[in-house]
Image (tube, rainbow, N blue to C red):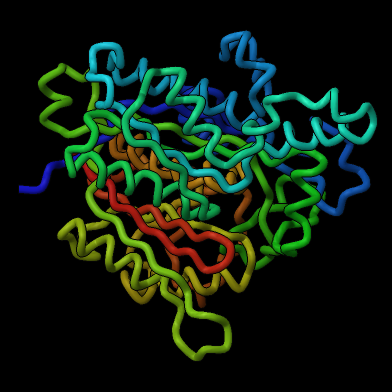
Length: 406
C-alpha cells in the first residue's frame, strides 16, 4: 500500500494575516489585504495596488545575524517555517542527520535585496556590494536558508514555475517521503516581489491590473476583470508519513496530499486544446477519486479574462456546469506567485478542519457563461472532506493537487 503523506504543520505569511490564525480569521471574515502600495512610492507606475504584508518586523521573527544576509522573501520563509515546525510539534534535532529535507518554490527570488546591492554598485562602487548578494537574490535561497537554520541536511530543491510551482514543490515533497528518502519535509513557497525593481519586472507581461481602487482591481471570474494584483507572502507546510506522525504523537493532522498531476499547455496556434482539464483529471486519478468526490475547488483565479475563460471551461469540462463550489480566497491577498498555491493548499486544509469554505471578496457579476458556482457573499458552511487546488503559471504551467481528510 502506498504511504499516505499528510500535513502536520502550517505557517502562513499573507497580506491579510500574519500567522495561520490571523490569516484564517481574516479569510473567513472576507477581510481583504489589498491596498495602495505603501512600501515605496509607486505613483509613477501604472500598477499601484498590491497585497502587502503589513506589520512584519524582521527582528521579531528572524535571528539578528540573518537579517543583513536575507531578502524579504527569505525572512517571510524563515518566520513561516518556524511557525509550521512549532505547529507540527516536531523536533528536528531528534531526527537523523539526513532525515529532514526542504523543498520550496520561488517565482521571483530576492528582488529587493538585488536591487539594493545594484544601487550600491552604481552609486558607491563594487567594494560596497554585500557578499551575500552572491546568493540572497537566488531562487533557491529559501531552501538553503531553511536547511541551514533547521539542520535539514537531507534532500533539498527548488521549483521555479510561477504559481504552479508551489503545488509542484509539495508534490515533490510527497514523492520524496513516499520513496523513503526523508522522514519530514518543509515544503511550500514564498515570494516578495513588491519593490521598485520587482514591480518593474512584472509590468511588461501585461497581465497586471492598473485599476487604482483596491476593491475593484482584482476580480477573477467577474465580468469586470482586467488583470491581477500582485502580492507577497505564502505558506510553508510540514509534511510527513501518516503512521510516522501518529507514532510521534503529532498534535494535528490537517489532511492528506492525496493526488497530483501537472501538464503543460500546447504552444499558441497549435490547434491543440489547453491542458488544464487533463491536469485536474490526472490529480483525481492519482487520488483514486472521481469528480463527484470533490467538495470544493480552490481556483487559480487569474483575473485575466482569457485565462478565467479557459479555467472556467476546464472546470465545466470536469465537473459539469456549477458542478462544484469554487473558492477564490486570493481575491484578499493578490496573486502571490510561488507562494499562492501553497497558501491555497493551507486554506483548503483549514476548510476541511472547520467545514467552511471562504468567500471571494469584491466579486459582483460572474458571467453565466462561465457556469461556475463561485462562493461569494460570505463563507459557506458545508461538509468538506476533499478539496482540489488548481494552479497555473505564466507560460503554460498547469498543476492540480487533491487534499482530503484523514
